[in-house]
Length: 110
Image 1: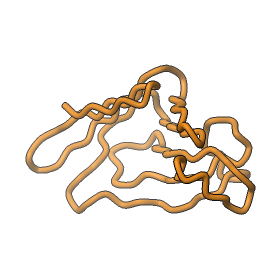
Image 2 (image 1 turned 135 degrees about the vertical axis):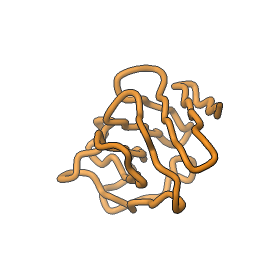
Image 3 (image 1 turned 60 degrees about the horizontal axis):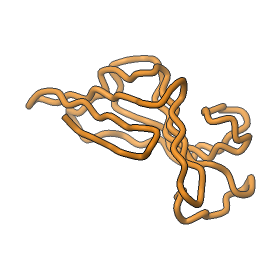
Image 4 (image 1 turned 120 degrees about the vertical axis):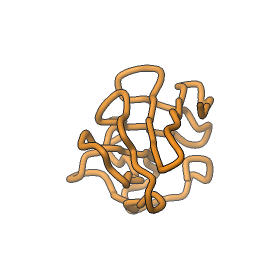
């Protein structure tokens, strides 16, 4: 969505992913950052959808918490709430994985 610069009801927002502070969780929110403040505000931003992870997969923790990753079109520029790197720890019956997202846009899974 950040690459497409698709218009939404509030114009041309940034787009983001939000993971709240309550863990474990099996969902995250995809949102349009209408007020361009780089974090999810349920009253002023547009919740595009709440995505459920596959059965058995859970988000165990995120850093920073709560996590707001926003992407500014058309580049897209990546913004990480509270820093330059985000980490998401997920688990399923096979074990755990850490997803790292850098402000540069690099995503690594370990």
